[in-house]
Length: 109
Image (cartoon, rainbow, N blue to C red; front, side):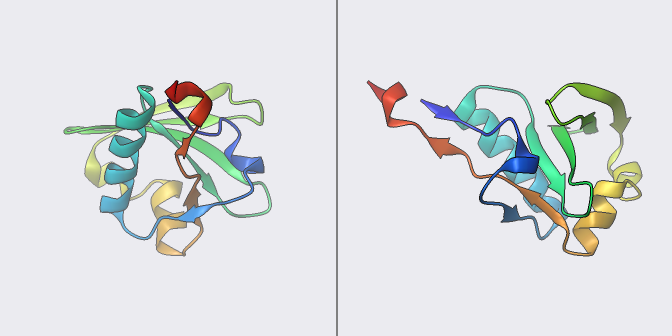
């Protein structure tokens, strides 16, 4: 079937996220193709901070992840609150990325 990399910080290919509406689309795309809630994003900086974001019509659930994918912190944010989050700041400066959803042909059989 489909899968996403659990370790966005070490992923070989990153896709730039350019607008806030991209985040919603990318989350929905990942959920449809993988059947798993949310999508991982990384802030391209010295620390390569990783987050898993879940979208809901009323806002976002943002999970800060450690290097192994374990949740360190959870924030529930309304759209206006999300605009002040470090992910939105990274988006504004061109430093927000995600990994592509990859098709694994072995799962298609």
